[in-house]
Image (cartoon, one colour):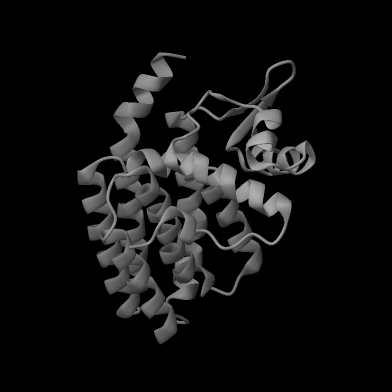
Length: 227
């Protein structure tokens, strides 16, 4: 079984190490929306200087995962339904284009990678470590498909949208029904990819995103009313 630690590639620099650790904390729920992220404390915990911590936080701020306010510092961005709906609406436009280009270019190796990532996800449960590993495997499943489009500028924007919503997915995976729905959706996406059917593939991806929005709607609406 994959673990959260094994799911992340080995960092090459101190900044990458810090960034990977902050992403892990976000994915596992160790840092909650609205909670402060104190650079000094993170630096002490990781035994690094404050410079790479601040650099990592600026990257997360640029992705929309972290917010900075003068005199308050950094906090994990709150989960807002309107934000998620906007992100997924833009993703639909970009990913539909990428999927239509990708479907005819997928190799046997790509399809094998997608099946392996999906299998990893089905073996995982609701624990913090499993949810982090599930998010990584989920991203590998989708990016293997989309990267086959061979359009680097389009992919750069898609990745930014994914980075902005990582902490939404960790909440979604808490529910057993949601995880089963993800597995069913991935099977439909993989079947359309194997069949090289662009219309079926785009439709399956649309269903997958809609299920995520619907699954998080109640929780995020409740959070919005408490702001």
